[in-house]
Image (cartoon, rainbow, N blue to C red; front, side, top):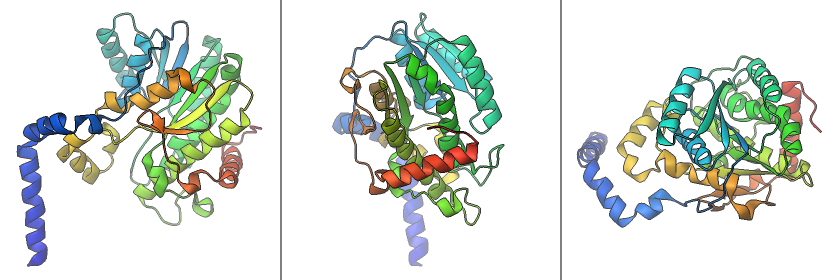
Length: 326
């Protein structure tokens, strides 16, 4: 009886939240909107003559980041798996800002052949790259593998971006000063690099797999920053906040929760602020290997500060991808 009562209470509460969502949202906006929105990038830096590459820029915070940087005068390349959706996003950016220089290129981070082909075309077409934003990602998807046999979370969120960055690092160094921005998550606090079962073949939990990949993002940024010391190319990671986007499309439960409590979540534009901050803020000119949230330095879990783990993950990543990156 108690269980049924609790279920009834939860259902009733959910219905009430849905029915009164507009009123609740208005109340939140009056009382606590500043907290919910998070930090704002206040930099007025222009990017005229600069080239920016953003992965997963056809939706969510990637699209909002592309719009902001285009308004600042940058030539923005939107690297998207779905070119059609990418073109739709680019069209909406041009509609919002008619001077926007945005271009769409096909990139599937779940396929190393696609990544290599993209990089080859990019290097032929562009002579400079000033900002690389590793933004694309998957979250809590059912157990699937990439084209190369990697578990999807670690394959797309970490290994795909690891390979892409390695192929473009020479261009970034030649274009210095340059910046690499890695979109991670607060979820890295709950992640552990399972070297004995990196691809979750022994056991699989979509949430833990996502957390592992986000921890890998933090470790990658810190190790890459160490290796790039003295090159005038900086690398920083960030947590965008809890953003109401389609990243929850693989989890019905998460999608329902996000829909019900959307008034407490950041909009994609608000979630993009820290990505934009890391890309343009003048005070970060020489800052590298740090982690940010709400446009301020953020806490990094102990496992995300381990130099030993970062170096081991680097070596394992190179081995899996069949590359040498010293």
